[in-house]
Length: 118
Image (cartoon, rainbow, N blue to C red; front, side, top):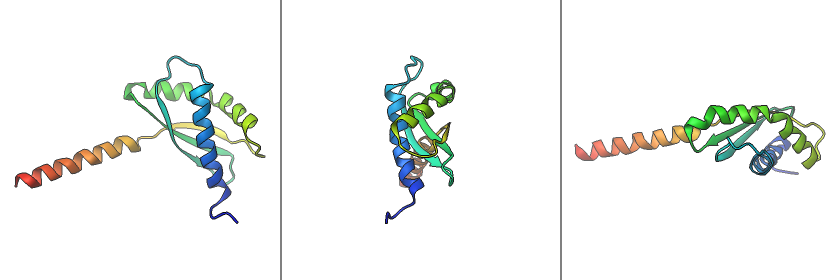
């Protein structure tokens, strides 16, 4: 028996496959450097929320638009690659956890600097 649910194993597999599809199959020159950070699956495995981050913040909206326009293509590619009964519908969202992490790090450095001055 596996130590975790099937949805968790499928989530990891989908993250890898979607990242590969974005990197090698979607040929849009407007796409910059994209990282698929996480995939959340509903319990019934019908909806997959794909979280992405981009290198340049100004490309965030156009990247999400391109990816959401290509979600049917991504779904068909996943259907070809994986042998699963239900192919989830995809929703691409921006992952702001990296930005929040940078902000927290910046605040901690500022606190450390002010405590050393006192």
